[in-house]
Amino acid sequence: LEVLYLSHNKLRSLPDALCSLTGLQELYFHNNRISVLPKHITQLTNLRVLRMNDHLITELPEGFAAFTRLDFLDLSRNRFSQLPVMLGDYPVLEILSLSDNPLEEENRTQWLQMALQLRQRGVVVNLAIE
Image (cartoon, rainbow, N blue to C red; front, side, top):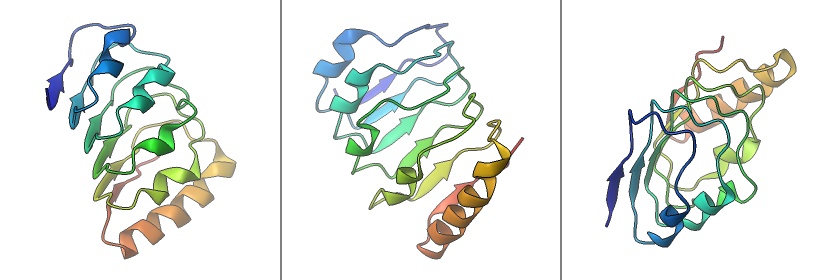
């Protein structure tokens, strides 16, 4: 299985069996009711597309940097008040969406600087801030 759609299912968590899908390249689980991402999601190191917008997520699990093949990451419309700068380190990232998260004021400048650096690399960045 290379592509999995779990969107619009009113999920409150991701199934543990998801971590066994090590060949998964695209995971779409937007528009659910997830508030905490399980650590086992970081075992899906072949992901190229990760769309997890429109949730209640406040932080990323430890090991989220393992997604070195990501070229599309959508974290928009969640509840992030701060985000790790490592999101700017994905080597093949082409699109990063972080819009409509309530980022704390002290993190906004840091994120704007990161967005400028990513844009210089050719990454499309959506960083509309609440």
